[in-house]
Image (cartoon, rainbow, N blue to C red; front, side, top):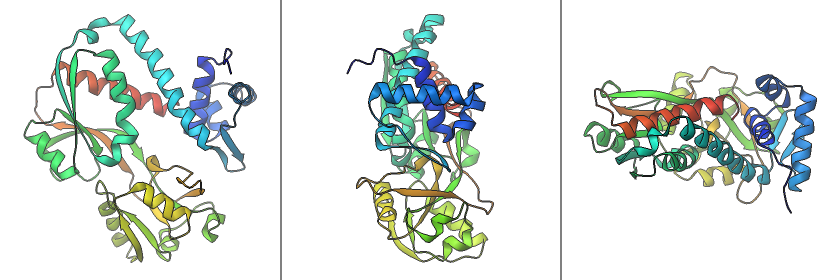
Length: 308
């Protein structure tokens, strides 16, 4: 099929709806009429020949195809932004040297891929080295100067006084549960309701430690069915009805690999967000390439908050 009529505006509108999960919220953010947004999405789906959203009273949820298209749409918007940026200021293309980036396994798939491809496009002569490690070891590498900057969960650093943190995303915790679970009938859930269910616990990036602190503060002792470092295992087990999970929103996807649907509900209790941020050594002289990477990450974070 020749998609002659897909426009950059349609990409932006689609990303705004995908990230806000609501036509009303996206229309306010974009400052356009909801009817214009609906018409644009309908034309895009018609042109692509596939359904991008499941529409319900709870909002707009991406279909599996919609999820794949979101990644492509972000790349297109990023490429256009990069072309305009290089046109306005060609200095970044002249940067050389190396950039050592640290990342944790959980965060890598959600923040690094798009950011890295954009950095390489803007700074083709900078050699990029990426190290994936545990949060504890990344902090050690940052303090020793072996890594220039890291992207990681920054809510629970072991050595906060030695590091600078710039938060990119504050992600609220959500309750993940199978679509047919009795609790899925509720608009929001309490920690006490969750604690009465079997838990699937994700052991990664100190997220389990943060959640253990929440349970303890509320004097709750939920039963753990399984602890795993695999996010896909958590998703599949929740989808299959083996238990529920309480995890940050940035990790949520509505479909398992077996195409089981996973629901997510907000918590009524006041639970701290899980923050993902840039981290570098306090007092270090940032190289131009490191500064460029940090600027690009800030720009991407702002664009996502504004709906692309």
